[in-house]
Length: 492
Image 1 (tube, one colour):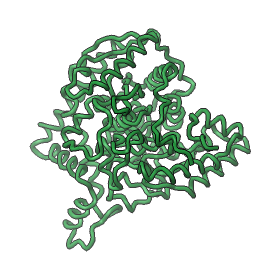
Image 2 (tube, one colour; image 1 turned 180 degrees about the vertical axis):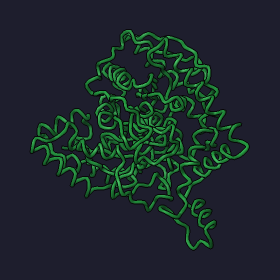
Image 3 (cartoon, rainbow, N blue to C red; image 1 turned 90 degrees about the vertical axis):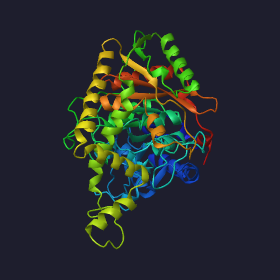
């Protein structure tokens, strides 16, 4: 079958259950597509055909024995920030180019229990620091909609792999928009769950109080299937919250759009740099939701100007602390012929980390240093609480909050964005991480260059089912999520 990659997760599950095709046939189909197409996209860092086919055969055996789960035999791609036993886990960095993980991240382990077949590990911005996937040591991933454009970041490899139909769905992580923004740039659905909903055990840390794993797929329904695997409490993660996870697939129609109050922050639609096409497509999607019965309510989010400076103090500070473990001694990259221990530390880190990672480590170390800790880091944490309170006040009068996922569509690869410009591109996403809230991106159209545009819906704590349900119903009434880039139409 040449069109297996066009099937939804539900259709793949039903096809496997009905013996229309085997997991081996499905896995071989995706491996052939990767071999033919990924040289153009460069979404994968590591492809694992032998392991994938072995897992597929095991899945087929489970199907025959009647012991299968709903997703047994369905392929997946993992962002290369999740540790995978016996497979190289790099976080997109030279520092970990030789690191073979001795254990599985909880997200990966849960996928194995569910019977998912791992196709490989996909590319990302180095240590998840970036918005374009260009900072990867392994080279830039391309946007399947336009190969001279970025797929977004840091989960750009995950987004590109799904958008090019090189995986039916993928795991991503979101520290300041790294699921939602690449989903927007690549025309996908991507969910950033409430902080603590998905285990961070085995997920290489960037900023521990902000990082959160989540699903990336074509539709809300597809994301719901993966959320059923990913979500849940984990005793091995001290930041995992012991709140029962929903059955996200069963709840896809649980929330009615009719009567839904959607908050429209007036500050968000007057941001300098908001592209006219992006604004128009988002407003059109909100009008569609209004036609479906939602009520649009103008709200104030008065802390908007504080988002970027607050985030870019807290995140680098935590990165500085987390990345001190990469010292050239215990594991990872080590410089050649160090003259002493100090030289070992300096050169291993200077040679092993790329420019963007070094920049953020330096910013964070400065913010945490004696004499500046109270002036910068502590003050940023106080402002973070005010940002959270700003959202909670808004949720007293609305059910969800709408915004663009990014102020523009995908940038051209190599565009002369200086770091500050790149950081400002996160204006719509980073506050969600600062507050620990859930949010989802849904594709809602294209700009004049036929690049995808995304709508972001932000929910209150633990409202992932509501967000998935609203987007699912929107996607039943529209077809933006079914659109495919030309490269995804290639057959093998």
